[in-house]
Length: 256
Image 1 (cartoon, rainbow, N blue to C red):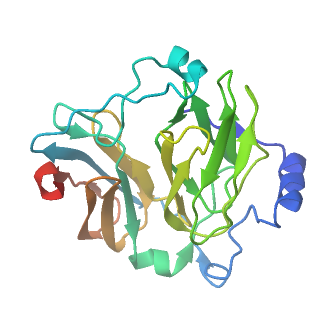
Image 2 (cartoon, rainbow, N blue to C red; image 1 turned 180 degrees about the vertical axis):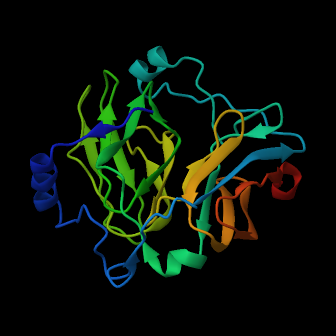
């Protein structure tokens, strides 16, 4: 997914206009932490998310409430479990604990993440962002959409979008895993946004693979989270310069 860079002046205008949200990481939980300085000995964690058992077939979505959606996406199906060849897509993988309790981490850039209404679905279905990172929400359809995140730690908002329109740039002030996004106009539209105060997270792709880079050495909890199949975690100790492969397996039968 392509990201967008916002001019600083525009970003500051949006911050002033929307609840005083910050584009930095100077919140109460991270302000006292030391800024991490890269040493060149950071590590990488990669792996594959597997799924075992009989994966439920996606169900047809009835979009007849909006004829435009029916025309745009006549064969739409649910995205609860997206799997191909035993590999599981749309799994959040992230670390917690360890050096994250000591350090804060700068963003490499102010590129914006993008969540888009496309063919009357959210795209992507699962998205990770940093605290303070610009989030652009766009409507790529010739019909009205609504965007409504149900937050716990951040400010909740609920706004409609005209055909082909976009919302003012949004920011999340605090970490939160994971925020359900819905569309009150089209209740079948759902997405999840994870907000992190560090860069060590990934979302598994269509091959079930993920990669987390630049991880400082230390002991962490590595977590894999799926909206339908739940959460799995493992304690890991990473040494300088290591490239570690760690796979997860979700059993569909455990959630029946």
